[in-house]
Length: 432
Image 1 (cartoon, rainbow, N blue to C red):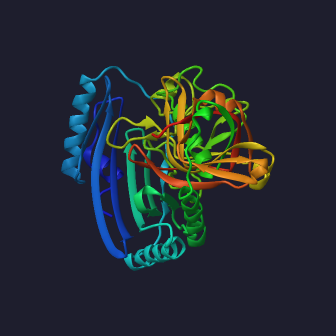
Image 2 (tube, rainbow, N blue to C red; image 1 turned 45 degrees about the vertical axis):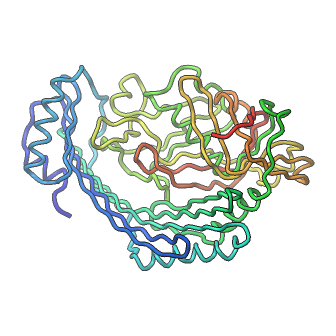
Image 3 (cartoon, rainbow, N blue to C red; image 1 turned 180 degrees about the vertical axis):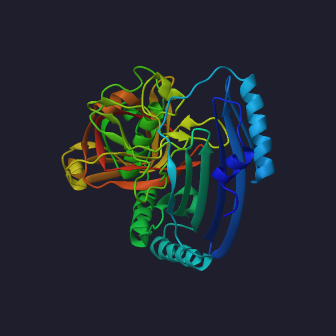
């Protein structure tokens, strides 16, 4: 595998600093795609080396080659930058040594076969609704090695498989997408993926506009697993130690977990990017909250282990975040709700941490009455409310948790949850 961080830091020798480390990271991937019946393949790879030094302040330098000369160069440069930086410190952490792998032997032929299977299945089910279908399947291999002056030395190698399917109808009548995948070994359930795509597309081709009368009104809102996952994702952002502020998250009826070691999670990691063992945290629950921390932010109290950042000073970030389940059946939640909105599939979600307002647009919003007997798909219904207020009224969750892969700040994460319900959330008529 070539040079790793431990061999490089040994080769460099002692550096005069309070702390220093060397990091290597290598990425490689392969992708098969079917677009409009035509098949494509792509392969890529990259590598880089970084050094982080803490003396007066914190300095980082990196280069896109890995070797002894490069290691000496970047650690000397990082040391100079650390002397030019503001005063900084790191919370203590356990010394970690070890190697962990989650590998999969999947070749381009297998990826091409899966991409074609997804495309043909979608084409067969969506022929009357979509004029353009794409399927993209990729396998990515990630390796990071970290060795520090404190004695930690870790190697982590993880492979991940993801699949995305898009369906576009004439004049934008259908714009459906679904993604599946995670760390390997990971199986893509083709039937479940296509069923999901067909459900979204079927609603979209019968869209109506939200009546201006209902703009700004509060509804009971049933969130499917993707939208529950989006809520979990934004909760995690609110609880990053660098962005958290008092009052951003108050009382929650639901519990949310960040679980770096989640089997099959797209954001799987055994150690964070400071070589701290990555802990499972219940970041929010009716009983309280626990912030996501790096060693720098944990100085003010808290547990590190959520650092992301190899070629810059690490920042706190989620890994695999989800809403915890309860004992409802999915159908029971709708039947128990006489009138409301159901959000199916996620188009976009974002949280303004300065105001605490969350905006969530589903792929489909369905207005329903009489326990689901009346179902009307709405094109332009968007949830716009304070995060603290909707967490206080999240009053039901189903038994089954499902996860979707995502990328956040260039890092793989996954998010998910059960079907859940908000007993009152503000709905606006808008597109985002």
